[in-house]
Amino acid sequence: MSDNQSTKRLWRDVRVFDGHNTLPERMAVIVEGERVTNLTPMSRLDEALASECREMGRGGVMTPGLVDCHTHLVFGGGRADEFEKRLEGASYEEIAQAGGGILSTVRSTREASEEELFEVAVPRLQAMIADGMTTVEIKSGYGLTVEDELKMLRVARHLGETLPVRVTTTLLGAHALPPEFQDDSDGYIDLVCHEMIPAAAKQGLVDAVDVFCEKIAFSVAQCERVFQAAREYGLPIKAHAEQLSNLGGTTLAARYGALSADHIEYLDEAGVAALREAGSTAVLLPGAFHTLRETKLPPIAALREAGVPIALATDANPGSSPIFSPTLMLNFACILFRLTPQEALAGMTAHGARALGRNELGRIYVGGPADLCLWNIDTAAELAYAVQAGRLKQRIFRGEVSHE
Ligand code: NIG
Ligand code: FE
Image 1 (cartoon, helix red, strand yellow):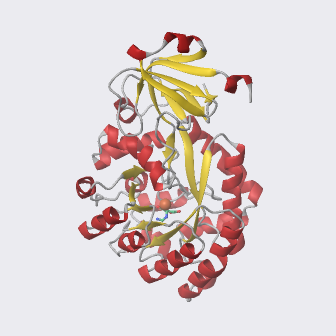
Image 2: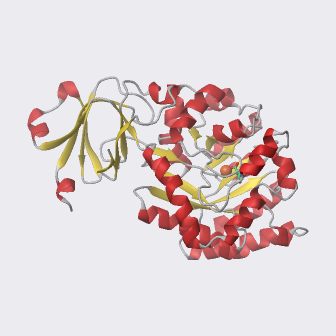
Image 3: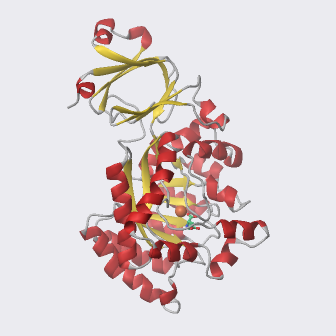
């Protein structure tokens, strides 16, 4: 244990957003080792205890470290050319059907070595870390062969071992149909179920399994086969569902006890009820909504009314959301989806962690992990209100100040 870790560390007079709410009084927060050990209103701070601590900061707003529960940040190449095509009027689906889109990134990701993929992912992840993120989910899905999917997952794991961030990995083999299976999508699903999932599970490379349930991707029946295979290996599931149409992927995912259904712009009332019954989290991705100039809003009011937890994520990827800023998503979620700033922040902390099955993260509580952010602002709402870099005063990761 380093000197720093053996000392109690104190933050005084901070406004605390605990993952769900802003606490009414200004607080003192004490961290020992990797845990928060004291969370006390300033009016009740024991000064004898305080004198045993090293004072780390005073004032500002403290939130849990941000949790980005849906990213595709490991990929080769870029898609600025498609961005231009879309500006000229081509749709995301048209580009995909012409062999571009996800498949264009598949080509560049297959060509890249593990080391190259790692090197290009580092600055993306560093930018998100500098924006206050302490936990990130990273999906595969641009390899689409057993070896290339495992390569992506190894890169994701390696990123988590190298940088001060918790990484969870998700196998998204059923993301798009690779060209070598063009007339045999069921054959490709066989590969995902019988080879990819078993290999990733046996090598300890995967924490969850995801699918893209959509006309341009895989059917409900095919996604169900993937979920069954995941279940055989004890892996939790997630789904990209109801992004471009209402196919029923969310209801299927809920039947399999999904951690989350993500995108869900086209989700109907029955789908919302299915999420509620399953206790799944709805993950909203305003970066993709914005980038694709989507106009169909996810059913926010129905989700709220049903009490379905709403998480928020960047969906950082080279096509539908080339955006590597979690705090920008707070702003987008309020402006585009009319979430309240508190809802948006809960979406990127407590509810984001829940969407990963990591309920112990994304919250500030006594005994909880000291993954924290101290912001140079007066109210938590300011994080969503202004789009402004440089407000992160300290980022505390596993009890250590990793950014100042
Ligand atoms: O979450 N919806 C499918 N997959 C990604 C997009 C990936 C891409 O366009 O490269 C998404 O939006
Ligand atoms: Fe995605």
